[in-house]
Length: 129
Ligand SMILES: [Zn+2]
Image 1 (tube, rainbow, N blue to C red):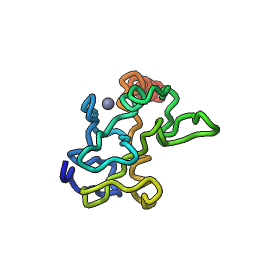
Image 2 (image 1 turned 60 degrees about the horizontal axis):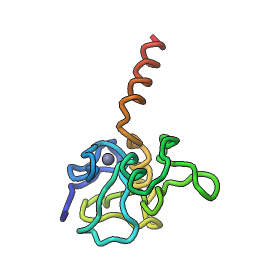
Image 3 (image 1 turned 45 degrees about the horizontal axis):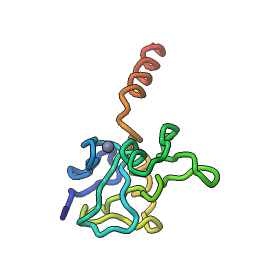
Image 4 (image 1 turned 90 degrees about the vertical axis):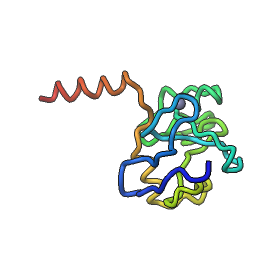
């Protein structure tokens, strides 16, 4: 993977190469390994990350936070961290160096492409009419 496409943090859109390496989900938050060379990074959606790390991710919230084993909430899934691409699309930000606009961009993405959840939201919308 050399370049996965440029990112405009002001838009709720993911670059072309921002795809779950296991189930090919797009337009969702992805996680990545913490300390891996870029060429070897596998992007994973919340579901696949949870499976890979043996973590219960069913309580994921809209900001991509799950209940931490220690206390409170965390955006890490086991050893996996949020994958926030640089705006040039040539690398990922380190966990502690993600700029605020990159952080906001990632949080605004959907947490998962869960059909059940989408259905529930649609039903709620219909009820509001
Ligand atoms: Zn996936």
